[in-house]
Image 1 (cartoon, one colour):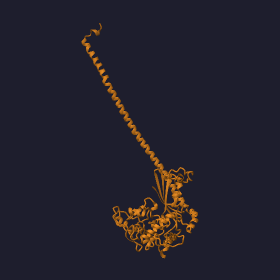
Image 2: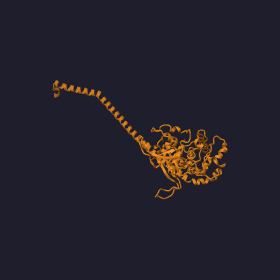
Image 3: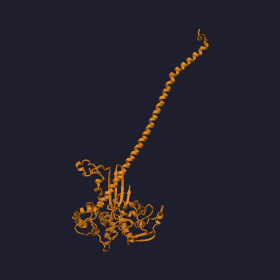
Image 4: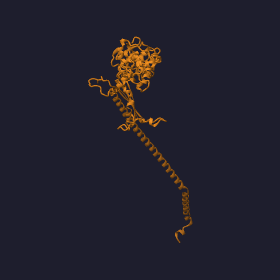
Length: 482
């Protein structure tokens, strides 16, 4: 008999129970514990997968944003560079056009003489620069389409430059605005006048421009309220303050419009020293029109009325710091011409009667709109127009023949005193030597504007110790990139 069969039952029973318990535990673990562990493992895997996808999505979004931003910046920089070169090309082409004005004048001289009976003055080709140079700034028809209902043939434009090398694939456009600076009233130290004559000339023009010789004047409200510094500033105060800004002395100027004199007394810095942030007067010529903001009495209302009625539009400007003091009657706005005339004959009805002044402004504006050619070959021709004299081909007799001698649209002619005629003729010129050219290049959403003051005066010489003469394309007085 084996040992297993001889072993007592009391010793074999516990071993069997242990096996049963172990078997029961194994069965119990197999039925309940294993599925729960599998579920936990599957839940953790899902969380890890979602977290990984979220992290990768964030990284991809960040990478896409950085790449898109870098691409947009590079595209903007490319467009801006192209826009700057478009503007620079327009500026150089305008310089070339102005330099070629004498040859253009020779071509139109026969036709002008048939119309006016005199040789033409300097032709304002700068005013037509945007139209003449359009093929070089954008191809004809670029960005244009016939209006709705318009025949395609009528809306088509003549494209003579589309096949020219370098012009068939222009990246954008450029817009040119140019104006002669002697069509404005110069407020800076005049080039050809000194001392009391210079101050008196500018004072009389500014006072007339601000309606000082008219009663009542439409500009009276501007000088009847407090300015930004809490000061009441009259016309005479504004005129005197502008003179004090550029004259070299430290005495306060006082303009008397009745006596047409400018005197000096007291310190010119007193008012500026009483401001919350005091400063001193420059006592040197203006470097920019923005400096006018530092002058007593010149604020937003004054600037919007007399300095720059339309922001960033050089054509609308009435004042300049680059003129010589002489005004071009073919280019200057009628209000500027009226102010220049009244600085000599302030007692004439044209200067004292607002109705006569309105007639002069309206009549000259209408004539220029209908016949956009320069009528005055010499400054004497403009005085003849003011006096209502001349032959059949002069402007005033032509208007009389068209409107009738008793027309209410005609202003009353003035009488030019014999002792002032020579000075008045010298205060007007029919040529232009200093041109303000503003060119805006546009490529995509990028825009660059070049603003340049060009001098073409043939008597210009470089400052010592340099030597030379005026270059064919002029020189730059001012250059700015916006």
